[in-house]
Length: 142
Image 1 (cartoon, rainbow, N blue to C red):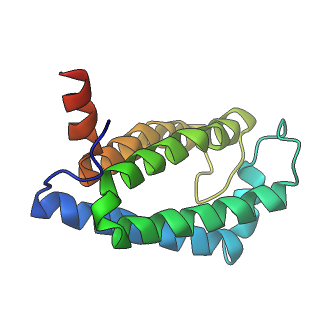
Image 2 (image 1 turned 90 degrees about the horizontal axis):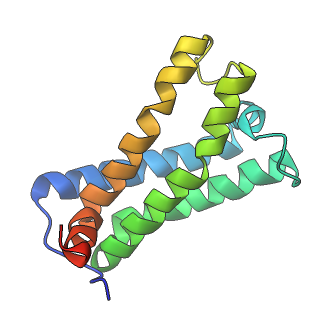
């Protein structure tokens, strides 16, 4: 069983809050001023309405952001869920690159390719800042 909380540093705490605010902002942008950019990023192989996917993922991002800020005692679990979410939305980033979609200021293949390398950093950020990385390491005895 994984603990819901492990001691984290002040730096980790600050980065957890920062990530939460980032996700809250991103979720709001899904529903407002960046909606068209997010719709363009939804892969064509998804059978659901692209607009629904954007709205639903925006709601999820807002909930995850609020959870990172407010659910301190459950931060390890929240960190795991946020990391899984970042993995789940990665196909959208790949779709943007492979289809050459210009959105979010990523108007060249080089910029879109570089962005792909930031997604694993977001996963690590979520795991590290919440103590989930330490919990996973303890669980697997690394």
